[in-house]
Amino acid sequence: MIYTEIEEVGWEHLLRLGEDLTFLSFRFRDKKERVHVMEIMLDKTYPKCPPAVSADVPYIFTLEWLTNYRLTNVVKQFQKHLEKLQEFWSTLDVIDHDLWVIYPKQPTRATCYRQINMGDDCFLMLFISATDPRSLPECRFMGSDHKVNLLRKMWRRNCKRWIKDKPVPENLSNIFESKLPAPPSVHVSDNQTECGICYAQYLPTDVELGASSGSTTDYTCDNKVCNRAFHSICLGDWLLTLTTTRQSYNVLFGNCPYCSDPVAIKVNVKK
Image (cartoon, rainbow, N blue to C red; front, side, top):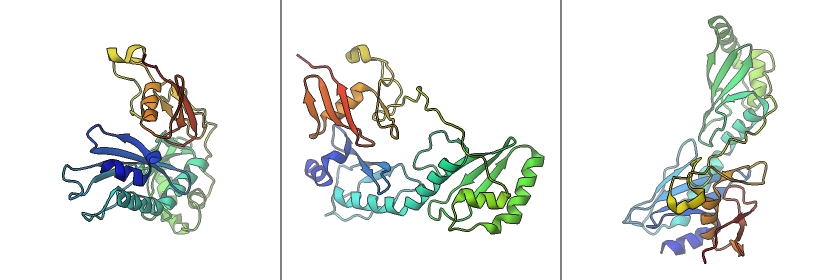
């Protein structure tokens, strides 16, 4: 039954499937081409008991469930939830692009805050509302007492200038009466190596893994926007679970789990 329901969702969206068929993860792209992963845990009494859903979002939706519902019903509710969060993510994308964000270095889609460098050793922590992202955000200032007090006074005096139809950087410039620093040139670190499938930097030390035992990620998606790192063995195992994967000799041809761009990975051929 589970295989039939996966077929209804689309095998191309399946990321992982547990051996006992109670854990599934699917990947979907929203209208802005952002990649989202939804994880589903099935109870032994499924479908009488609703599945448990988790995802990289600021808050999860309340799953509506009837005993005749299927995985496609979960997917539709998840996609509807993604639609509600489009403005939230777009707001954060503008902040990341226009302002000097120093933390978090690699925010997830669930992260609601940004720490911004305001210059002169002062920092602003913004908390963006997931349900009303264009509203005046909560904030916290960091720096010397004297400078922080000046910034707080300016915030209180000018916060009424906040206009919801304007982007966050412009509103902040109006409040602080000066343009905030833009981000410096960023160079992608070669050390960014957490695997996009097993979520670990290093493979476990295991004799069965042979030369790959304890190794770090060794394959990176060629899409510069995605640039996701993987262990070759993890990516190969994942590609082998998909019916859309093609194989020529010891090379697997498929698509990146995150951006869907073409990937090709060598695998060990058992004789």
